[in-house]
Image (cartoon, rainbow, N blue to C red):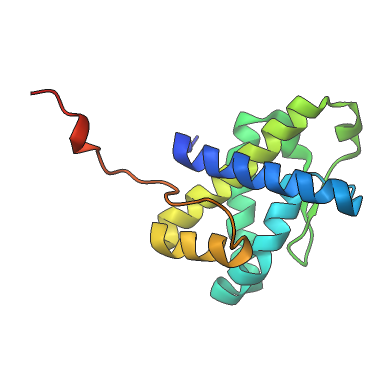
Length: 148
């Protein structure tokens, strides 16, 4: 199973929290991760086509399902949107939020792997221009904190 970096998970948490705040005002019933994925669908489909987006989302969902069991029941529709299971009604909000964050983090992690951090950041900033995001998945060491 591919684990996401703490940076990627932090970005996913911020995006999910942002969308959760937005969805309260719009009365949407879909989990926020699905809103985040839906908002990324347009730019990613332009980049890789609809089939490419579905493939990427499918892989992210498979990886996330290894960490959060209820995500295994989520399905990707032909249009690339996500269909969540009825059993989500029995989950508490903490479980749902964790699953949402893991799914978004896996999707962002795959994007960084395939297209690189700069282009992934550009896509995220295109969708959320005001989001305070500088780094998604930097593997660079911080040499300013080395011991003598």
